[in-house]
Amino acid sequence: MNIGDIRTTRVIVTHPDQPLAQAAMLMRENKVGSLVVLNPHDPQRRAVGMLTDRDIVRGQVFKGADLHCLTVGDVMSTNPLCLGVETSLSDGIDAMNARAVRRAPVTDANGALVGIVTLDDLLPAVASELHELAELMKSQTHRAVQRSETA
Image (cartoon, rainbow, N blue to C red; front, side, top):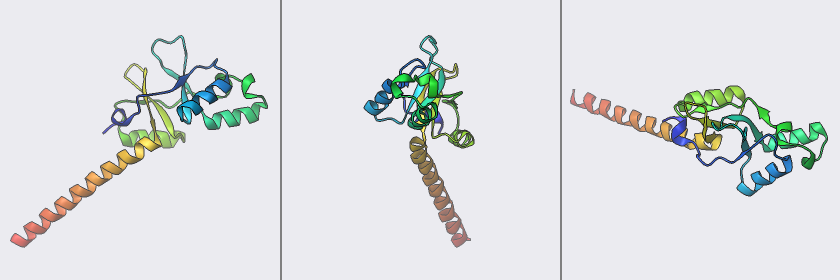
């Protein structure tokens, strides 16, 4: 299983020049905690940043400005961690842990945005893999017991 298998393909996006108040309303309307920031002039749709609810609060407090006076570019996190669709779950988890992020844009081989992955996506996938491992161990233990009984 890899990141491409568990990604969410519906990604809500914004651009650096969008007023922060509009971006916050977009997050609220779509019930998401983050937006992927794209350059509106980039036909490849490569992520240039991430905007989280935390970025909005921290940026507003730090800048001491009204949401209507700030843009996404004023407070977004730049250089987002992007995970390729072929990235393994464990490599994706390691990368997210190293960067201390809860969400990461998912990109194709050309760096184009094709989804997003969150901790909420990773938890059931990892649980499923652990369940498969437990079943494998159980079947091997059962076979070992059968072999010892016939020996």
